[in-house]
Length: 317
Image (cartoon, helix red, strand yellow):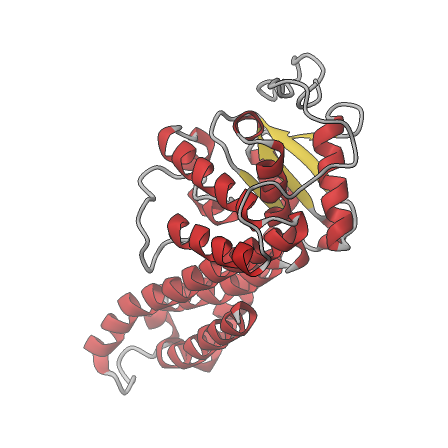
């Protein structure tokens, strides 16, 4: 159902672009705006993994530096039938995680040191399964297409009069002015609706991958409260990346409205509980690693990204 809804929303975005684009910019303006927006977003799409990981100072880990965390992701990727992604940790007390990369063969998943400290093994497995679901669903590509159309619509609105459609437009001058205001808002509404739909889909698939939706539900509740209580300075400086995280990392984002990148956390938890009930599960006990159990609460020392940090220590080592 979520895939159908995403397709319908993308179709609505395309229709919005074609209709408003022609009225505001004419055929030439519509084509120019689309290709400029596409060029900008294709660059971001192709380089998204490096750009975002660098933005948050994430450092890659492996079997040597973070054996249990890396092993967990490898096992979950195997369950999902995915190639092994690159695995990163970034230094932040705010519990959160994200996935990036243009396709499953070039994917990366990242978790904060705060989330590794806060969550149990089962809960963390649920979170990483959610991120792997985004990789499997190619949500980076979906959101890039959405951003391209939304960007083109906004560009048309900003430059409507430069394409000579202001005076001879059937809507008239006032109509064009109103459309210049309404069009970007309508595009943003559809863009955010697609983002929220992708989160629900990743929750459901993540519950399937880790084997227990209740563990993911428990994790979402903890992350939600942690994200509200702990400020994320890097996310505040780069709000355009907020949609990538499992929970919105920005302060003041507790509302569930049409412009929110994420669904209401309670609604997500309720959906996961329904999924768990359909699977006959009532507790968070689901994921069972093939390797050793967690030994302590320590996490890797990721440092501050200046190159002078001590070597990594594996999570739970």
